[in-house]
Amino acid sequence: MIFLTALMFGSNTLSAQETACGTEDPTTSSGFLLNPDEDCFDVDIIYNTCTDVHVRVNVHFFLNDDCSGGIQYPSAASPFSSNYIPPKKGYETAQEIIDDANEFLIEIQGNGQWNQAHWGADVTDPTCVPIRYLLSGVYFHCNTADKTGGSLSATHSTYGVNPDAEINLYIKNCTALNCTGVATYNETGVIVEGIGWFTGGTLVHEIGHTLSLRHTWLSSQNCNDVPQPEEIWDKNCDGTDTEIVNQCWDDNPTSDDVSLCTDDCSEHPCCSWSMQSNNVMTYSGWSSNYNYAAFTPCQVNRMLSSLASEDKDCGLIEEISTDCPPPRAFVDIQPVVIPNSPGEFVIWLEGSDNEKWYKLEFHDEYGNLINATGWVQNQAKKYVITTCRFKQTSTTWPGGFEPETNYTVTLYVENNCGDAAEMSLDFTTPVENCITPVPNEGPRLKIAVSPNPTYENLEISYELEELSTISIYSYNLNSGVTHTLKQIETKPSGEYIEMKNVGDHTEGPYMIFYDLNGDLYPATTFIKM
Image (tube, rainbow, N blue to C red):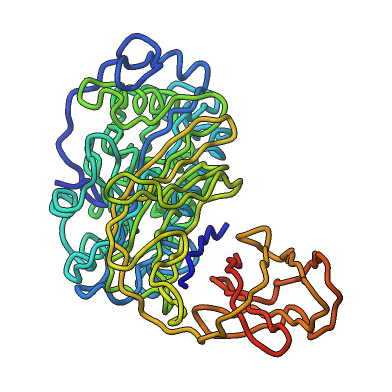
């Protein structure tokens, strides 16, 4: 007897210093988008109604050649170079990246562009930013060289997934470019990492480039509401040593920790508030902070026009909606050389997005339904097939699975509005790779547990046919740790339902054992989440 367990715990650049040749300004298509495969949308309608446009984004992580080591984690709290996490955390991290960027887009909608009137730009109110990112997939690549180097164009051509339909975000090192992010103007590849700090604003800035926005100090792109601050810094007050200043990180510039705000003719231009810009597409301490950062209405319309332009033709858009964010199903198996916990084969589902319900179905290579979870109200995280079995029982694993056999898993998800998505993945079960204790054969009780999976409380029901002495235990199939769920007790015949707290159990698959009149028997399995 082997046990199947399901775990749903809930795989040519424009850089900070460079610019690239542009393309002609995109043109606006007519017609409101109802189906991205048929017609494109009217930019004015989307902007004026502030209807969210959901853009697909894949996230890629890089490992060593042998798939060992951790992945670099983009964090606003730690430099990339010293922040590594295990690959199994990659899916959660990818979701955090997308969530942080979406939060940034939402929060900046209340912020207006600074200093427009001072520089002759049109004065505008804070603008709606109806663009949201949707996690479309999570991918892992085992290549040490590409983990620490390689241009964006080479990376994108090698690893890009559906580049015409999905923006591809590569979490890797761009230290050679001295940047926190790099993107190609009007293309769909982005690298974020580098020697600096990562925030949701970093990704929004870089995707701004993919949606046809340039750095503001280089070009306003015919956006009359984008100010372009510029002053001459006369360092010696005599015109012999001057510098054009068009970017300010903040209003307190320093050199070797000495303030350049001297209150005389040699004062740095950035000491003036009029030189400050909070535009997302500039470089400043303000532009990456959602408390201050802003797009202008023209920039937002330009990004929407890019999505609707002839070259993109709405291909990056999953959905345009005013109610629920669209669901996205994703199924993955990490590189097999990355070990999971002993005795488990993991199917990862965490790359899914906006799901409130999920269901899994497993079919064999002939199309026969082998196993199904039914609909579960929760986020899909992972599904584990335990590859341990008791030697005195059948070689078939729980749920009808067999070792070294081909199957197809299909994940169905729905959001709160009932919108659905699905994805299928072919896989082959491994050989069993652990041995569990061998219980006695013989008469057994029928013991049922619910809910399964469980977070804290587990209801155990069973029936005794005669006066019996019984105790019940849980056995962690990964670690071998045993917990006592029911102390030994003599009970008369009858049906029993008992509630047990398993909050002290670590996450993972468990076997229920019971001792009946001095003999130990296996009963069923459950998952602690």
